[in-house]
Amino acid sequence: MELLQTPFAPRPKELDPIEGVGWGNRASLRLVSGPTYHSIELVTDILDPKDIERVELSLNGSAKYSVSGETLVGLQAHRKNYAEPGRYILSFGDPTLRTKIGVRQTDLVTLGGEIWFVHITLRAKDAPTPSIRARAHVLPAQSVRYYMPRLYEITWFASATGRTPFDFAERSPALNLKRIHFMDESIQRVRVLRDSFEEMNVTKADNAFDLTQSKKEQMAGAFTLDFIRYGFGADGMLNTAARSQLAFELDKNAVGSVPVIVEAVEQVNPLPTAA
Image (cartoon, rainbow, N blue to C red; front, top):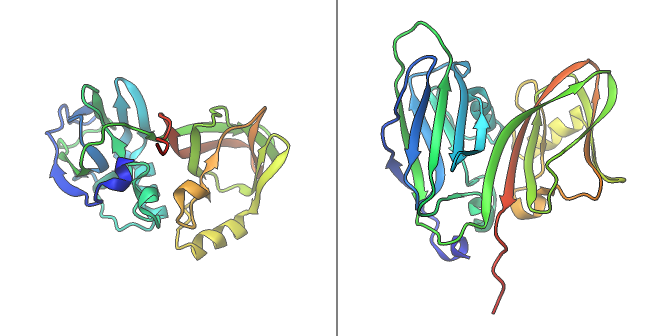
């Protein structure tokens, strides 16, 4: 695999100008296809992440990343990465992991002829036009893409207090979860059930301790299951395959919506085998 055979040395690069920047607009940046992107950074004078309603990364019109500015800030805080106000980072590879394949597995491999766009939706407000420029850390091109990083948000709703199981609908042997963040302060315990087998069972206090021990930080108001907190990505990820159900049972002390942030990686091609 090229991700193991080629040197890991991401180089900073300025990207093309972003078009259509303005409050209430959906600005766009077309990425050059071919390079491998380790990260893309939006350098702005927008200090309040709530002003960035949505950042989307799409391949041929299909969104692979779709999150808010607040989510991008929170994810960097969870990993304890250094951050500055106004810088919003789409992290593909994960430098917090311990092995080269773990760090590089979720790099964004782009192939010739593909159409990649980053769209930034800004909140409508009466203020001077903001400034946004884009930069990236890139690696050499790869001829085959084996993994596609995914980052998206969904919402579940608990109509009663106590234990409520939510089925993770996007089940597949090819889809693995790196982290899942439940943005709800009322969650006291989470159980993960694959069919009739209990994969995990952890309280809010114990989970916060586990994250701190692994030098990770619990996002404010969240309950984060970090499956790769030990630093070994391929070993730790939760595969979503199940015969009938992959359920996240949330024990809540309040009724209401549960915003969920999903960090995942999808295998899109079979791995090469030894000749």
